[in-house]
Image (cartoon, rainbow, N blue to C red; front, side, top):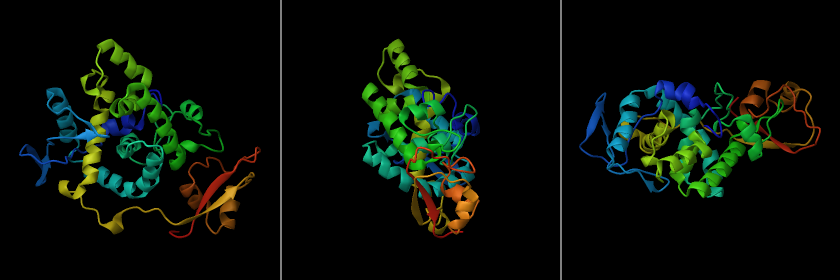
Length: 297
C-alpha cells in the first residue's frame, strides 16, 4: 500500500494471479456457473456498513470483473479459508478493541493471503508494512526483531493507521482505499475530481480494484459452501496451545534456547516469526513475550 508501502504482495502475487473469488450475500437470477456451482451477483453489498452503489454501471462491472477473473482459483481460496481459521481469532479481537469494523480482516486477506509475505518493495507481514511506516506507527524493526511479523502487534498498527484515515476522510471505504493508495494520494484525487466517494473516483487500476477484492473475499468466506468450497473442520489450520515466556534479557543462541524449552529452532521461529536473527539482542532489557507451543510437534 502506498503510504504503508509502495508495492504490495497484492501487486506482486495476488494482483498478477487474480487471487480473489467473487461471491454474494444475496442471490439473483443473474449468475454464471463454475463447474455446476452457481455464482450469484449480489443485489446489495456493503463494506463496514457503507453500501456499495451497484446501480452505477461501472461499479457493477468492476465487481463483475473480479467474479469472472477469480471464480476458478479454487486451491488458493481453499488455502485462505484454512488459514483464516488460525489468523482471524487473533485479528478480530484487536479490531474490536480499537473499534475498527470487523470487515477490515478481509483487507488483511487481500494484502497477504494471511501469510507473512514479503513484497518486492520491502513491505512485510500479514498487513504489509514498509519498515519506515512501521517504525512511525510504533513497531520495532531491526535485525533482531521485526514486529511486522507479529500478527497481534501489526494488527494494532494497522488499526492506528485506519483510525487516522477514517478521521481524515469520514469514510471507512476511503480509509481502506488509502491503505493501498496512501492518504495523500487518495486525498489529492478527491480534491482534483471534486467528489467524496471512493466509488466516484477515477483511480489507478490497483486502488480502483482494491475494495472490490475485499468485498469478494468477504462474501466468499462468509458462505464458502454456497459457492462450491467445502472444508471440513478437521482440515482447517488451528492455533496450537502455547505458553508465554516473558523475556527481558538477550538470548545469545535461539537454537539452544529452543532446546531448553523442549522444542527446536524451526518450531520456535514458526511460532515467533518476529524473531529475525539467530539470537535476540536486548540491551535495553525490554520485555518480550515468546510463545512456546505445547503440542503439534
